[in-house]
Length: 122
Image (cartoon, rainbow, N blue to C red; front, side):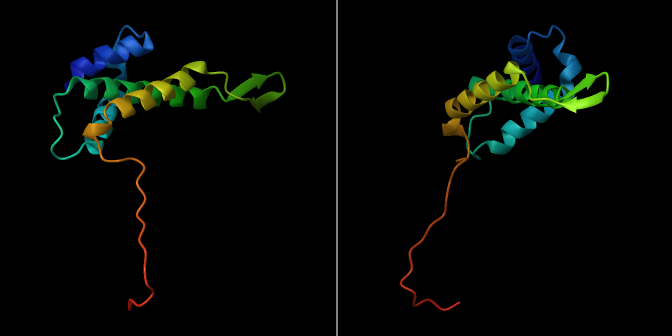
């Protein structure tokens, strides 16, 4: 997973022509992707580049959605419900790539449970 590949995929997802302007978001997305990986996961797997690009796209859409929450009117600022469909689709895209890479990552939804006879001392 190299930054040039992730940047090109990010440009594909976003429609941006110059993904290097978003270097910090892309770099953070690569870090997030690596942090989710199992120790023995193949970091050269092409799916991880797609996942990192999807994370970067999602983070960018989060920022844009937060920025557009305020609508400016004659009387001042009013909060409005986000109309950003790109945010919704970026979330779906991220979920799909997370599922695609699930065999390379730590389980995201895991619950510890145990049964006791009640005779244990603490």
